[in-house]
Image (tube, rainbow, N blue to C red; front, top):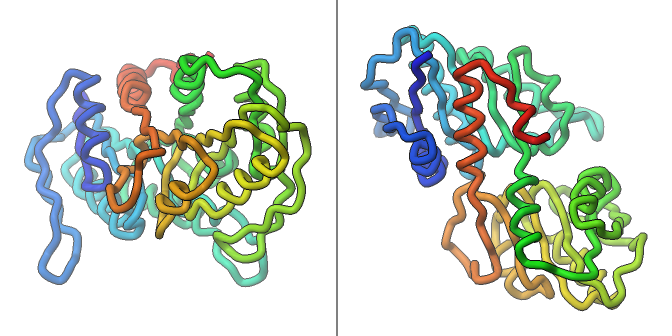
Length: 310
């Protein structure tokens, strides 16, 4: 089946890397704004009966990029595309995945419903904040992992005496799976969240003295929790502190906070475009384009995605 790649404006750099790996050209589309800010889309290429892939992480500005994705999907649906796959390396609103207190929305489910309503028939995403979000969709979801790219990077560094640190109990399973690749120990931070985007580190479970600590999380937003964890393991005798996350949200002054912290290096992927609006000397960005490109090829040919991670 023929397929076409359309990119929104959220991460054009990643989209260009994907088409390079695919060896195809980007499909022509005009994606802009009317004078009042409304999203304006025109698909220029003929897409009738084709397999279409929209590259669009729903990152900052989240609402702008989300609506842009939905409007592109609607345009493709009305142009008689055969299948419409949203390639969303970073799925925004994923942290609002349950009712953690009375009278709050489950926005991750709402966004999933919007995808289907817009005409999206499949979703290709990576490292969701919680795996059960896949169940919010009434359409197929292919869930990829950045772990092979991240593990390969750290193995090349040939670090010794490693301990993988989970910044909270919820990430312990993720950290344990990562630690197995290095035959490393595991440490867990007991965290109490005071307000959204604000946490207070209470206790450290595990031994980090005289060790190289790799703090592992799925995403880094304000970096407040990350830096508190780094300071905690530093106070417990860690000799080297690195951090790694699939998604570098890095909102507000997060880059400056990381720059001023004991963290020597933060490793993220390019699921979100890294803005140069602060110090980024400590930040290493790894490309997930080859994984996404291979997944697109397999999806277009109705082949298994899961075998990518065996």
